[in-house]
Length: 216
Length: 312
Ligand code: SF4
Ligand code: SF4
Image 1: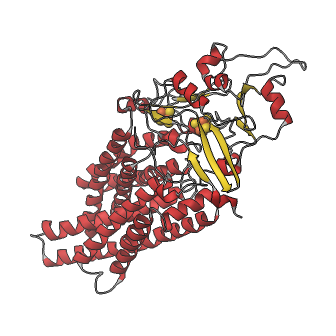
Image 2: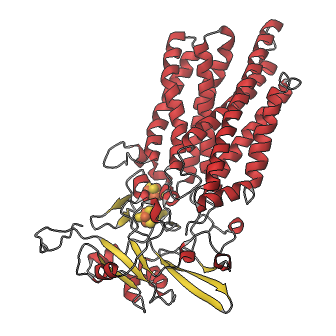
Image 3: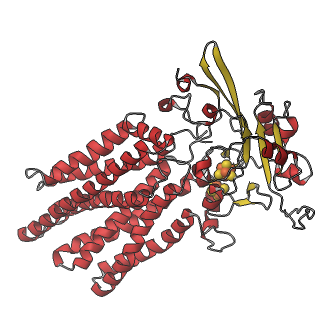
């Protein structure tokens, strides 16, 4: 899909680059996004394209609870795409990283390479799937299901190449962070007000007793 | 107050571990193949008559292990009937940036060249076997080295994402390959040389003892590389430290310290260099078996242990 914007004031055409902004000041941790996604994308039992990680920290009475809504970051330098041997994973012009279900051989190398653990094997179709920001809805002119359903309006989705979009304006005027920026995958899910402990995968768990889901 | 120690994860959704036992087995068999091929080539290029049996054993083991190896991948894929998609070699269909693609090309070329090599070794065509030996060496090293790249380019996993991986894999392939060769050579000497003269058997035994020394050298190199790897991951990133924790005193310490280091490296090292044991076939067989188990434990800890640090 090669949607292009109208020429902007400087006369140059810009490509669309979609991104997601999670404003955690507005997130209440209700998990509606997880549910909306499951229903929209028929995500099988036990698998999630999007979910909200929840942590608690502190010692009574100084305690707090933090949320981390999680999606595929649709990275600008996606290591999953670089490593997929059969080009089943590919990148659209608007930056969305897709999996072609007719090409995926299920080698799971993308799952092993992705630093964010967002891919899963669909036990019914026997291929890899992940969040694609509801590309089918975007093509129909709708917003992703999670964004549409978010009751606190904590999820802001849009084109960061368009300076007038809500996401561009919010990102220009607020401090934003991404997950694991040091890996240079260039994630395109941005967070306002994310908690460092929630973003740290090794915090709050007993690493010797982590439970990994059974294979499909 | 250290707030960090007061964190509890209430809810998260980890996905399945993608690379499991079949992948570790695949790495193990390609390692065996590459290792025995290199020893065979060294024997053939060495050119002496008494080296010949080694050349022959390795020439058979290499293609054999390489038939077993990709079977593990077929079992592991969720769409095995689409495996041919990998072998179209068309730029539009295959991603030439992926280490798996390097692997597919190598796994096509190397077994063919190794089989031709075996044919010439057995038909005593010295010139041609030398030619295919020289072609085969870089292929054999690459076929195992690329598996190191598969892990090294999995950049999310701190244990894998080091430039040491390919070298470590090649060296451990040598270790397991030499061990397998020793066992096979001893089997041949004990069971298949009944009609040979005492002098011939003596010469053969000497050769096997020489291989024992080789094995020791390979184990020392392997342990040196492991030491480097561990020292660095102990001090680099947080995820890397957690991986080191899992291997050294956590969930995988039994496999890593117990089986790989003590059983699979230190004890065999002692056996192949201690004067009272180094010339005994029984002890050498024992040491080789331990080494092979140790290298399997290494494949397992690297593959499964590397993925046991949560990512999200
Ligand atoms: S988050 Fe993972 S699956 Fe998504 S684009 Fe980035 S590397 Fe690929
Ligand atoms: S599992 Fe599918 S999408 Fe992932 S790397 Fe393999 S072929 Fe590509």
